[in-house]
Image 1: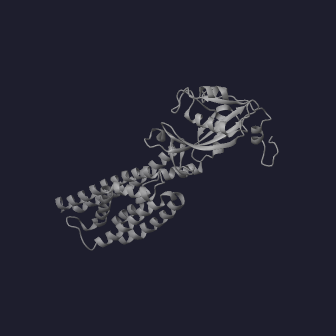
Image 2: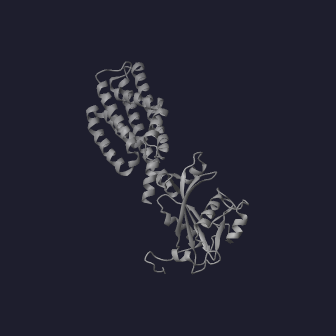
Image 3: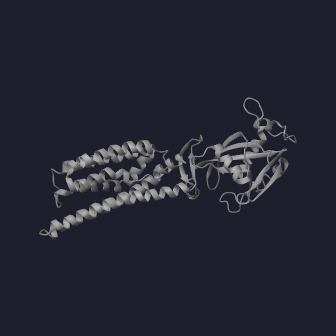
Length: 387
């Protein structure tokens, strides 16, 4: 669960944290001037650097970009104090500099996203974080534009009563900034809490190493196919293979016969934990023992699999769960071979049956309690039979 929470935090990073030093800089400058704004916002920026490094290190480089942007805005704002902008009041230098930087981000959005993709190609969560980031940028752009235009209009239209209106405008501006910060913090916490309750699948590379994660329904409906790790286990007894018929409501291969134990590995779950969870949920199997056969990759209409294939000689009673499995049946090798191309089996199973047939593990007509396969699975490394 801890690993899952970390993955969700990186997949849905709070975008307001990128701007927090800058927002503090703007607010403090309104009250106490730029010198004090530097003294308060700079330590906050340093603390956030360490916080992001230790809690969300996958996006650490991305956060550094915004820290450098904050420092650049502060430097340019300090210089701008010596050179007043035409048509704007002297106290607006920092807001104008921020607006210029934000306009650059909005104008060159595609180019910035392309650069990020090249620098951090393995960070799948960056796509979501990038969209969240630009939502905040647009909100900040709107607030600053409103503030600058209103302040300028007040100066020209009501020069004799400008001070009262400007003070009110300042209060509104600060209120909007504070509201935006607290709103984002609350919003992200609520979304993260919901995401923890959903099922997340790891995304792996061709070697099976985790490079990201995605919510499972999002993955199935996304045009892009991500490579997800799955477990697949053959149940074998007396030279027969136990198969399940998938539910009619399954998104993938409904109503087709398939390997008995099969499931997606959840984020933060090991291969062994997934096998044991699936065997218990689908067939009430406990103390489940199995042996690794092979790994392979496979692409279906909806998704891509990195499969961990195992075999098991199951001695205990199998009790299928009707809510998870539509039907079950013991099949002989001959029955499977005769129907292999009839369209009643999943494509995954066809690959796996070929691997099993070529493995030499099945001893025709002799897979009983004393068969070689059971001896391998039910013996410990020191050669003693497991209880």
